[in-house]
Length: 178
Image (cartoon, rainbow, N blue to C red; front, top):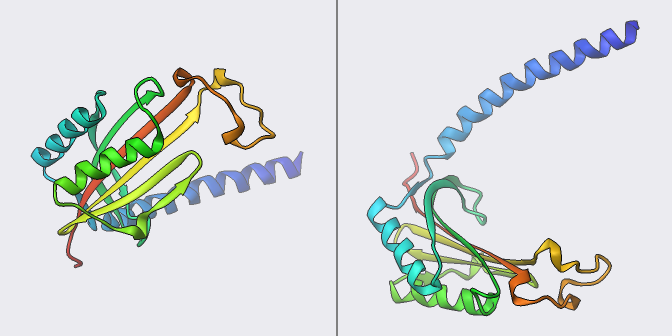
C-alpha cells in the first residue's frame, strides 16, 4: 500500500509539473505562431472558389495551424479542404495536376523542396512572394474495401466509390523576423 501511495504522489507531481511546462510551451508556441500568418480573407475566399470550380466539389475554408515542413516554422494559414471518392476524382495524379495548374495560372511558382510522392499521396509546395502554399492529395481505400493487410496498397482492387480522397491546400504569408 505504501508504494501505491508513493506512485500516486509521483503521478500527481508529474501531472502538475507537466501542466506547468505545457503552459510554458504554449507561450513559446505563440511566438512561433507569428512566423506565418493567413493570407487575407478575400484571397483565401477566392482560392476556395477556384478550387470548387477545378475539383467540382465543395471546398471548405478555415484559419488553421500552418507548419512549414522544410524549415519547421509555424503559424496559421488559410486551410482549404475537401474530400470525395473515386466517383468524384479520376486519380491522385490528375487531382494534383489540376490544382498545380490552377496555382501556376495564378502566378504561383513550384518549390520542389516540398515535393513528396507515395503510393497513397502527393505533396507539393508553391511560392508567390512571401506566400507559401502547401498542397496535399491523399487517398486510401475505405474500410469496407477490405484490403489485405499483408500486401501493398497497390495490390488492393477497389471500386471507385471505395477510394477515399482527402485534399488540402494550406496558404500562409511569411512574416519578417523580429
